[in-house]
Length: 335
Ligand code: TXA
Ligand code: MG
Image (tube, protein in one colour):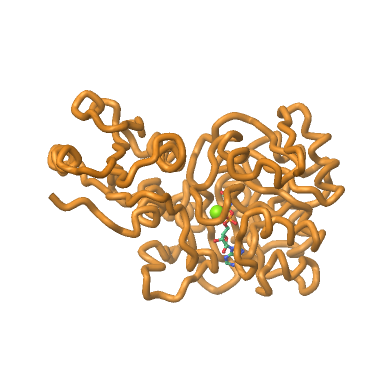
């Protein structure tokens, strides 16, 4: 079995060498940890699918350290894209562009004529990519079907022995994956809600953006190929609890013979004797802690049901609820 080394942020150059050698290195971003490999190395990219156990028709994000690095593959971008890049990069907005044929391997694009580019806010990771002088693929560094990792420990849990190393830069700040915006067609379309909201994008572009948010319900054709796979699915059944349903939900939990885990704001802790995970009292904290909470009740304190709070589906709440609805298979608690 391969030894998975933990790199400190100041060891980014050693990690970059591994990337150049075709090895896999997990890297921090402000959203979630990613699983990196040289995006121009077909074999390395293939090993990412293997390590994740991910279906290989699902294309990978290409993570760059700068716009200039991206333009090696896309050519110069138009004014609309430039405005977005100036405003949101580095940061949590992933942009889909057409790519020149043959510049990226089929393994990365999943055979599409487009690719998704992201320049993360984490400085260590940008330095690592710049030192490797090649873009890296960057799917979330979890086993396929598990919640995305928001700490290096989560990555280690899923990937120990399967990858060369993990750069540990502490817990991620946002906690849900980037917003994906498709600029390859006429009207800009959000394929996955994230920390950057449709309102912010519209503010910068000065034109409406299609938000495919309520999207990708069970019967619709998936827009981002990844949307068709069951993501973020813990072993337990998650039930989403509306704010005014909490008293009833906690009484329901007391009546269960099966184990119930409660993910809620700390003020509710005194009101229940069930295993508890403090998810915070606002949507930003809940987004940051959601995946850690799902993992907590998956492996640390296994339960049969997880209760988790609903938030209004606006702003960051769109991204939070999108992930939570997936984890819950859209099941709400009804008293
Ligand atoms: O925040 C993030 O974006 C994280 C961090 C690590 O950077 N990465 C991430 O990657 O979430 P991943 O691979 O788990 O999700 C990428 C999504 C997938 O659903 C994939 O189908 C979609 O992007 N995607 C990639 N290329 C695409 C393309 N050309 N067209 C449409 N969707 C694409
Ligand atoms: Mg993922």
